[in-house]
Image 1 (cartoon, rainbow over the protein chains, first blue to last red):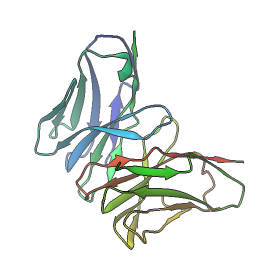
Image 2: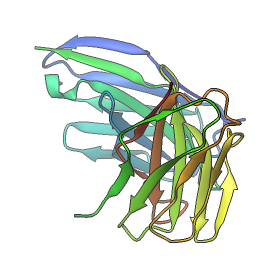
Image 3: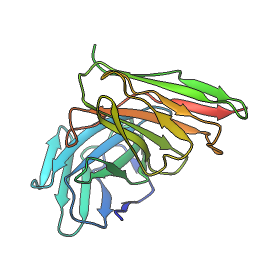
Image 4: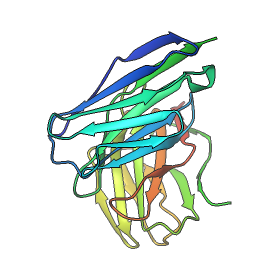
Length: 111
Length: 112
């Protein structure tokens, strides 16, 4: 059964730092991988989607990489800002279309 | 203004009561999903529907029921059989099984 793990569970950094969030999954037979952001008490906002055939995707200050063979993805956030404070969720899609979520990394960026 | 709406934002359930959570989308998406989120946990799939008049159980379907009579709507009923219903419920939709999932703002269900 597919399991998704995110490390660390929480992270606090000063404004301006570059940071990396990690996601690992146990079954490499995934269709794609998606990174989401969730603000407290809100729904999820999709950040990046990487197809299984891709190595990385970029959007603004965000860069997500995928190494399917080792079961890992990273989300790189450049020049972090207080507005980046949120919980970041990683989810892998299995072939039948269902997403399997990690528990998230709670990020706090301090001014 | 396209998107997914969920109502109500907060819902209170009494013992033995069935309650229904609404999810509507105007994105013309075929697939819709219901997830449950508990504190400190990842999202868990309750039910999903790839097409109108068809739906499938997810990982934690017991105590829940759904219908998909219209493409735009995928209501979730939390029945009295669900003994621990307090959670944050999220609805999502996608254009197909492989597409990006877009989420609604969520409904927080509390038990009186």
